[in-house]
Length: 306
Image (cartoon, rainbow, N blue to C red):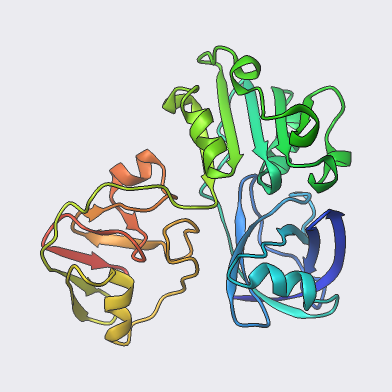
């Protein structure tokens, strides 16, 4: 973990604040790429994930934006109501499960706070001279963050109280082989985009889980932790992460719903049964990592690099 301090806290839309974070000594921060996120451990002790949405070429500060979620688990309320300029936060990462792949043309679709990981992608597309456009929806114009940062002429802004739902079908049209679509936002928005765009041309980032099929097996399996030499048995009633904890083994985790990637762990042997919302198809096929908070084993035995 890296110790940072809050150097600025700004309201960027109704219910959204942007935090600027830096080292206390002003030193260089780890490099990152568009689509990356960080784990922030707040003063309340809770760890939350936020997309980096600032200037990736600024080596001395990060920017994240936090939407107040009245029905959430409390992290956003802490950020909005308690966290202040000068307060310390602990940082993990950055990590990137939503990378910008090379393409001649990009179509970005954002719903609400889902615009945050797309902002650095848009900046990169501009630098690369790629053809890009953004369809950005929100409940009200005043609730839509960073409207003033969008380059003119490329963004279609659709506040729902003015123009209804996003016109996805007409805006996306036919997605050809030169185009990659990036979408981030609420689950219904992502489902609508998935219905229109071929999977090979689409990249999504989710805030919530979707329904997943039953596990490959419902019988116990064993997990060997290679570094400690500990072996734990995992039955159907517990997750791999919980079984490890019972034996005193720990690893950093956060959402424990398979959506954040914080607990991603290297698999040294065995075949994982992936049940997360983070890994891409090629990462699942490689079988060399898993999220033990939700993923299980397809084989009798797994060996993890823990």
